[in-house]
Image (cartoon, rainbow, N blue to C red; front, side, top):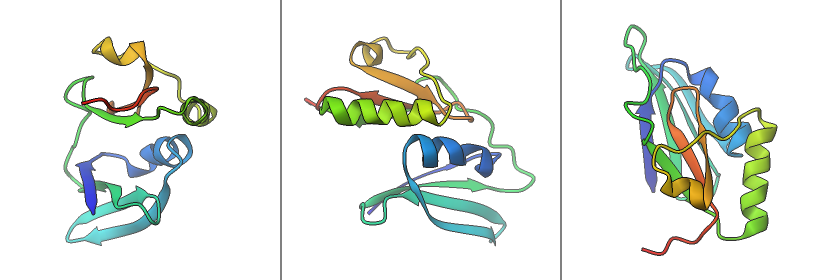
Amino acid sequence: MLRVARPTDDIDALLPFYERGLGLSVLYRFEDHAGFDGVMLGHEKAPWHFEFTRAPGHSAGRAPTPDNLLVFYLPDSAEWQAAVDRMRGAGFEPVSAFNPYWDRDGLTFEDPDGYRVVFQAAAWGR
């Protein structure tokens, strides 16, 4: 099981991006757990999920650079197009990648905290 966790200042602002845009489901949500609120999103049977937490009184701020990425390799063109259409349908438009490599075979989208997701229309080739 892999959990990718990071703080945010506004969990609810992130939900449209990760639920409607990425097509993830809320797996678990908690409030005031040792002073933290949080949500975990993913796919019910996937061996990974994302966790976003908020600590009242603490500012998480925005992504430290525009090159903080989650990259999804989608070599099937129909699957890639469906992912792009889902993100656009959720109201998010592509942004120019900081590293132009990602613009050659993919599209980059930015969440409300400034972190970015790349849909790469290629297989990972090491």
